[in-house]
Length: 298
Image 1 (cartoon, rainbow, N blue to C red):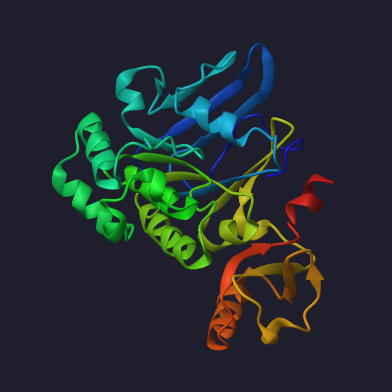
Image 2: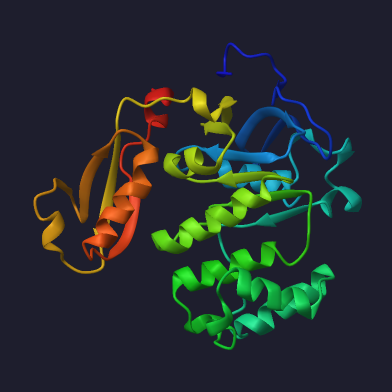
């Protein structure tokens, strides 16, 4: 459903039981300046709804507004018909910020135990998420001693301490190596079978891999709310950045630090990763270099 020709109340067309999240003509921002403008959508079916858009489009502001952290200038956010400012509504969701907010002076285990007490989780839940996010070997290190990727994993672990009906995940795989990012996407994919998950990313590969619907923002407005399979790009180029030099990619085209490969689509990425691994190529990062959203926005 493209913006402009759509009715004001955009919604997921497949209805199901359970919890609902609605955003009704919401405008929000900071210090009087509007970042979001009249955002309206409604979802009431479990699944992963990927929030996409260029920097400055309003993704993080949307998440803060949906979670009740940021009060909108106009409009209402509701969970099961209740405004988000009511405790019962807010307690039905969990928001993971793109900024980890983890206390440097605590170890990973201590920090998770702190969050567990705040959220009413148990020591057993802390042990469970340490294993779930492969954090056991870092559990007794101070957060200040961890790499950016390790800190991100510790931050993501907070999401799974307590069961919620709705999860707002703002770039949960940012700063993670491809292997760990795939593992976290796998966990989130399983979560989306029973929960509503809004998941922001700059990466359409991630969106196509795990999402069911796409909410695309542009200039603070909802530019697109549609099924994922309805998005099409003319070509799909990925870039790989290496941990160490490799002769295997020596003949590939380059863009800065990235070696480029054109694939038939995002479905070709797993095979590319296997090929690189079989030839001993050690990756620092794999990213999509051309985002089909740019064509949509133009």
